[in-house]
Image: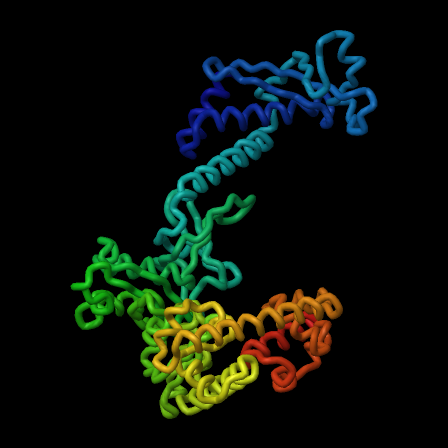
Length: 495
């Protein structure tokens, strides 16, 4: 019978490609399971197989617990310290007592049970091998054959015992997939699962698009061109930003290829997805202008605080700039990381004039200066009292209309106003505070919350009840920001 154990270990190990240690562990578990039937299923049994001879020994085990332990529940495999110390004076709680018992005959084990335990252990070992083989390959492209479809997800055979899954949301919409088709995907996660595939692939992530370009464009693989980012509307349109490390190389032309061959290969792999190749620029405004292509941008106004840009385009180009369903501006926003508001050049100029008038009024009132002097500050790009108060003196002196006395007086007045405002703000904060639910509204910052509280908008419900124009009459905010705060408050209350 001992030879049967060695023979089984050899056969299963060769057939499944699993090391013998795992096979012997499975056999020991099968023998232990069968032995427990003799001594009670609650007992703890260990079987040790000699891997060179096939001989095996069986041991019954008891874990030592403190006499008053609340965890002492199973006398079949637990023993109290007082009783254990009668035979083992030095034993301590947590240690294990083993007693050799008669081993059952291997031939008497139910064949089905032994098979089930061994198959389970082998399967676990195979799955562990898959995880080990692929855990360092996250971020790579993998190719396999469609094995089957499960509720919209695609199971991919990668060869050997490795299977991957492309979840439904990671498949390109309306893209056909049939068993036997060759399919490629981006490995984005490897996770040990009790059942089912452990490798997770995607055909919709921006990284998949970038990896495809690495395959098609040798200059990227050579490090001559760098991919700076990508944004996708899977199956419809995408934008990818590129930068040449060597100024002699045209990054866009290299990615497009001769007669569009390279970008067309990528597009074919993405079910016809149209790809715009965008030159990256360290100047955020220029990068946004590039990303808005094919629309031609005529004017850009940057709001650093809100991390947004207002984009001005010709009236007849407005639809093209926005794109179908807002697709073009949405992808450009995702690619650049800036919130983009597209409008006609006329509307942008009107908005800019309104903002400048507001800034002009602030300067005139706060600094007690006439419209002409305030206008000089606005024309030079100053937008706040903080800039006037703390910008280097040399920068102010570069303004043709200013001399040292004017600069010093403007800085002192601006600092006095800011100090007064800070004191007033502290006093108001001590008496009027926003509610916790207002502070918790998505997108809300503490300063805006306190400003709202000062005008009576103290709770999230107060904010949710307002219309955008009502809120803008109360405090000065960017219109898009104000609208997003109101929507977030409503979602928080009524979701």
